[in-house]
Amino acid sequence: MAVFTGNTRWHTLLVVFCVLLIALVLAGFTGRFLSVGDSLAILRPQAGALLLLCALAFVLLRSIRLALVSVLFSALAFGSILGDLRGPSGDCDDTCLTLYQKNLLQKAWPRYSLADDIIASDADIVALQEVSAHNREYMANMFAFFPNRVFCQFRPDQHVVVLTQLPVVEGTEFCTEGSGLAGMKVIAPDGQEIWAVSVHLDWPFPFEQFEQTKEAVETISALDAPVVIAGDFNMVPWGASVRRIAEAAGNELFGTIENTHYLGGTFLPLSIDNILLPEGTRGTIELRPYMGSDHLGKLARFKLN
Image: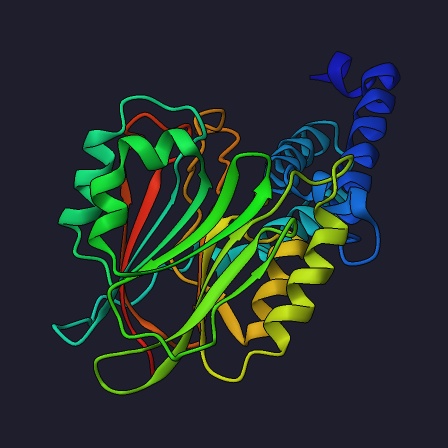
């Protein structure tokens, strides 16, 4: 132990590593002002975990003050995502609405099982992304099943779509073409009017998510009833892009942090397919299989307050 505690080179390297992790955590909070902030925010939980290991190493090196600093910034990292770890309450009955969220993947195969799964869910609202001519051909039965729909082009042969079995308030359908936002006002079985919105954001910095989010916030802020938002945000729930959209609608994350993209995993969960519902919404949520896509689906049953 004496040899270890006397090794100044290891101590210096550990301090440098810890400082870099602290800088990463702090930079990840700048996403509201700097586009690069959200790209760094994705790694916030991992930075928090590594800072705890740094704290343990500092204790072994008998640098108690540095250990406390490491714990403090680790707590900051984890504390900022605690709200996103809270799952929804499960008290939902037959009066609940059902929402199915899915990025279809433009050229995925097969399609039939996914179309059947969406139909079998008996969803009141379906939010889809990357809807292509390919998907429309091989999932024609699903699109025919839902009488009301809005298609909005986001990228070439990639549409953001809302489907619903609910009645639609005439003339409320909207599409912000090229901005990844589509929606319409529907009438729930209890007579309440709500906005159903599908979102597809670009990747964060160095891509265009930062500017795109500004347009989404402007549109959503103008909606005059409770808003149900689902989509592929290409951003984790604690990222500024997701938070700004949620705040514009008076919503919060419905569900908890779960990996929804095939590139994610235990140590880097990419919880980028999110559902944002009005604060205090009750219900349940479950993941649906990939079924040919690179994104898992989400099936939510909920009751608005």
